[in-house]
Amino acid sequence: MSKLKHLLTNLQASFWFVPSLMVVFSIVVAIILVETDSIGGDRWLAQWPRLFGAGADGARQMLATLAGSMMSVMGITFSMTLVALALASSQHTSRILRTFMGSRITQVTLGIFAGIFAYCLVVLRTIRGSGGVEEFVPGLAVFFAFVLALVGVGVLVFFIHHIASSIQASSIIASITRETIASIERIFPERLGHGPDEYEDQDQVLRSLEERILYPVPTEANGYIQRVDNDALLRLARDNKAIVRMERGIGSFTVKGSVLVSLAMEEPPAPATIAAFNDAYSVGRYRTVEQDPAFGVRQLVDMALKALSPGVNDTSTAVMCVDYLSAILAELAFRKFPEARRYEGDELRVITIAPSFEGLLAEAFEQIGASAEGNIGVMVRMLSAFETLAHLTASPRRRRALDEQVRRIAELAGRTAEAAHDRDRIAKRLMEVREALQIEPASNSGEEKM
Image 1 (cartoon, rainbow, N blue to C red):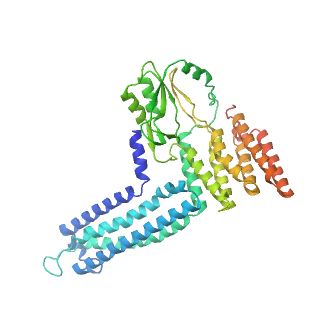
Image 2: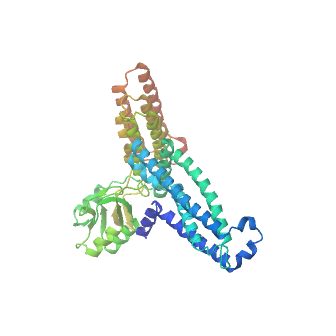
Image 3: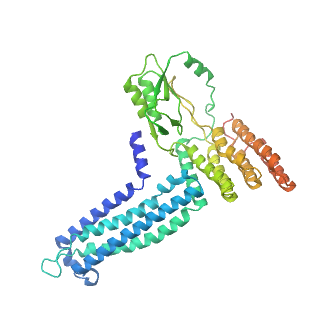
């Protein structure tokens, strides 16, 4: 089932799948309309000769013109898409290309033009004769082709608007953030409460594992781990009476033959067992956001680093990235992260590599801070982000991570802020952030204390 979901996700994100479905649908519609005309539809269509009264030659000419026009428009659409991809890749980062490729608007637009072309070809080949007794012109199908042509004109105008909007930095950043937050809501649905501590001490478990024989399960492919079927891992651990320790987390790169998981069991795993564990992992050529929100964070960080580079020097884009990173971390600030240990009853079965708020916070801001030397605007905005996050979490551990990031910015500003006005501005923001880190957020009074 996991493999099937992974396949469907990849198909939906491809350029060809949705357009292909629309072409098939267009062919089916063309056949239905032609058959409707052939079984007597022309008798009631004769009531409106101005709409459905085209002769064979006129119908052929119109359909041929529409088919040729749709191919030309489709070529223009492909060209516009490729130009947008090239501009976005060079201006921001190549990591965002899959966001464009997965755009449903782009896929549907290509599908509409290709579908109209296929529809016209199917109807065109059914027209017979030229004014004689054996003449057959599917009037309803020809008229519907005319309607589709008008729809195609409207879609082209809308697509031009969409491309012009989608290559703007704000649109790209907002799209990545929306996709990342959707992934967070799927993976971390629980809010912090009075449950068990999510940061469990694993030293005792690890010591007990060291006393047992661990058998490595090698990976069978090179690539990035895109998905892990956790239910399959738990089931395999139960069936083999083993403890499974993940050695590679989601988003990690695996080299063929390297250790994917380690099994604490009484005898070496059989080849079928090794294959079953590999089947629980989906490995591909690139990272995806579906189970890896850290990749969404990484994309925004890359855009900010590109904007702060000397060749680009676009502070506004970097500030936008910081703002949206704070929105992503705000979604994580009050959520309960999954425990690294997973049990079946009282039996420990799987030890995962689980993400943490502290790790994602460092992923989001450390590199941007290191590249923001002397850029007061970016440093002030990062401090504002930390203040916002401080108001959203009561977790001492998460607050300590925020305080560590604040100290980094304070040290950076002390080294690079030259003007007295800038130093005073930073000092004021630092005072406000530190006050926020000392106050319990009223909105999270029931949040778990860690």
